[in-house]
Image 1 (cartoon, rainbow, N blue to C red):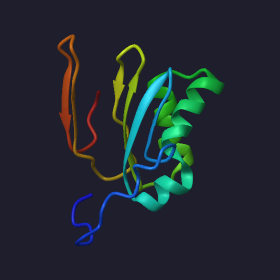
Image 2 (image 1 turned 90 degrees about the vertical axis):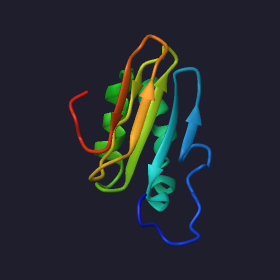
Image 3 (image 1 turned 180 degrees about the horizontal axis):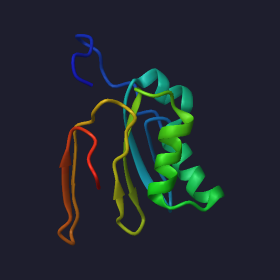
Image 4 (image 1 turned 120 degrees about the vertical axis):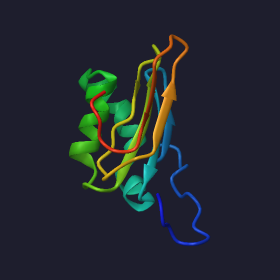
Length: 113
């Protein structure tokens, strides 16, 4: 987050809330820590993939749009097969990725991926 309180440290490295990994995906969340903790967003992405059988992008989008109030969270999610998605429900999210097969993406605001 930009313009956060002086001295504030990340409060979302809590396993299940702001970070989570299993045999399906690895998830890292950023944004308003209270909402991320309250809604356990990282674990929810993996759970939606596991129990609903959704793809990485579908599960991430589902959690971002349906589970967390707008303006609170952004995710970087990588699947076991190296797919990457970076959804967010905030105005913007500083993000970037590069894969070994040559794909790269850099962004701040919404863009077509």
